[in-house]
Image 1 (cartoon, rainbow, N blue to C red):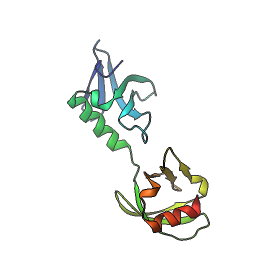
Image 2: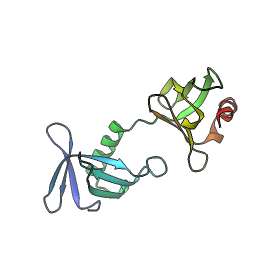
Image 3: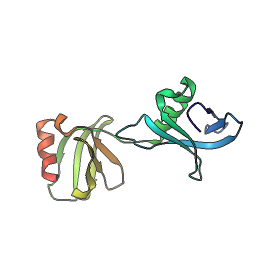
Image 4: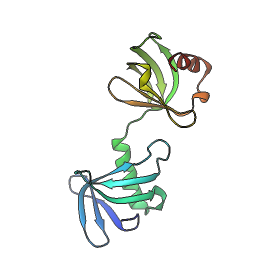
Length: 156
């Protein structure tokens, strides 16, 4: 099923319902990004609670405005990946240690268990996982201030 083969609505519980052009109704579907970091608006599967994909969205921009709004609302409510803007300081250069950072969602601190929890992605992007499994994104290492880059270099 492609992007134009369905309509979305919310049921009385606020959950997404997908109705195909042949009137098949799928209750409680959720959008899942195929490439949440590299291509967040491309390749989105609409998935049932049993994990079965019932529709595929090539590009978010291809959806009708009402469908796009519902998908975007649902993605925002389920995804949480703060972007690190600055590393203020760390408690130690040995792990585990606590990082004090400024993100696009405000100041926070988290525990880095080990250097293996910093993953290099394509280009200059990094994904940093804390001890609770929350992922923090560094979109461009070169865009960080000198102090932040110096701290980061000690862990890479």
